[in-house]
Amino acid sequence: MKRLIESGLMFGNLVPVDSPALAERYNRAMKALTGKTTGLADFHIDISGYSPEIGDELGDDLYLNPNGCNRQFILLTTAQKTAPLLNAKFSTSRPILRRFIEENEAELFALTTRDAVAGELANSVHDLSSPERLFDIRAITVEADTTGSHVAQGRELAGLIRRFKEEEDAWWDDVLIAEMITLARQTGDVTRNPITLNPLTVEHQNFWTSHFGGLYIFRDVEHPAAISVGPKEKLGKLPIRYLFDFSERNRVARFLELNRLVEPIVKARGANAAAILGQKMDFILVAAATDLGLDLGGATRRDLRKLAHAIGSRLPQEFQGLAALKRWVESGGDWPRINSEHPAYFYTLRASPGENRDLVNQMLAELTPLDVRQLFICHKQLFYEFYRDWPEQKKQYVADFLVREYQVDKAGTREALFGGDAPMDDVADGPWGRERLIDVVGPWGSVRRGRS
Image 1 (cartoon, rainbow, N blue to C red):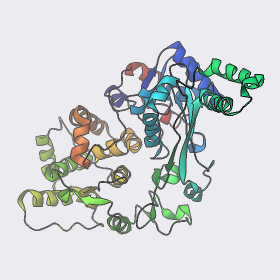
Image 2: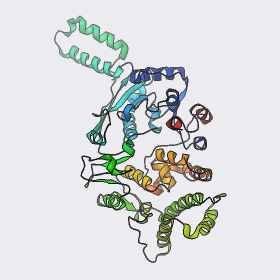
Image 3: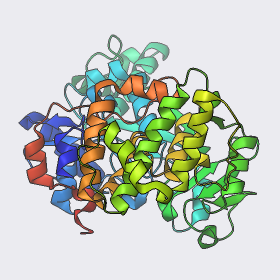
Image 4: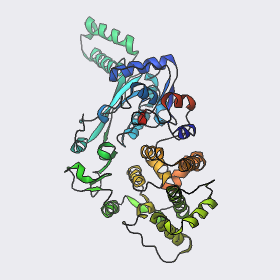
């Protein structure tokens, strides 16, 4: 994984915590949330305040996310809004955190100049002992305050001020006045500088979770269903009418079609279908070549064409199906028949525009794992898991490609592939020293070190 970290493709855009004041604020918040502290003087944090170095120090990459639900967070700066979310258990967590920061940016900027803001993405479920409990999560509420309770004290002081103004004998109430003075010493003048955070509650209807082997739940669509990555029999009966798994390709395809969640790449508005299909074919070809033990060499486009000729009839069906579709796009002729049972089928689709676009593109990435670019953009956790077990040649090719073709213009690539600026996790080159992070956390990080 060291290659990915050095290239800014892993642990990128994390926020450095490199001053005694910030480390001390973080420790206060961490103590309040978890009862633990860190002995590290400097480290890096994601959008939720999770630090891979601290996770490695504690041997617990879920120290801010106990039981994998009700994720806790620590905000030291509003700059965290562009950082990725590591160890995500729900697809909704990062968008909710980013929205909360953006909607309260001025207030959070003021609060974090003197203290850390700590909080939780709270729901009514505190354990996920069975898959059914996932369906009890209906909304996520962001609860937050400084470790010094400035927001709560500000609300309390504002209430006392209202009493002072409205009650007839408030001028003679020495106890009330004393309470106001005491709180004002801690909060400042809340009449001129209100200390408040706009509440945020978000409905939790359509989402992905890594729990129970991976599960996509769509409740807010015309035809609701849950789609399991693994065998659905392991989940038992769920409180939703339809339950499919990835082995039921026809049913998954029908679900996506009925709810108008996908569109063919060749019909997508503004898409260069031939170029997109050609790149997908290259990725599939690289996977086939490495599986056969063939030398990728410099892996130029010309080299890949030679490899395709060398592999010949052994080319995967995914490659052959996309090749037929690409020929139709470029020169016409007979329309290739690629139904949902064909291995190339899901490679021919992308998510339709709309609020479910990112979630659907993530599921398509998991259904088309040979398309490593979409996997990296839409489902980084799965990309990292696959990358760890790839042959060295494939690791080198994929890392070089992502640096050369994606990092230089991430927004343009997402526009070309998915339409619009898909708000996936940013993996931009962070302003911190990668070599030091590699030394402290290791080439994989606390996410995997415990399993090795």
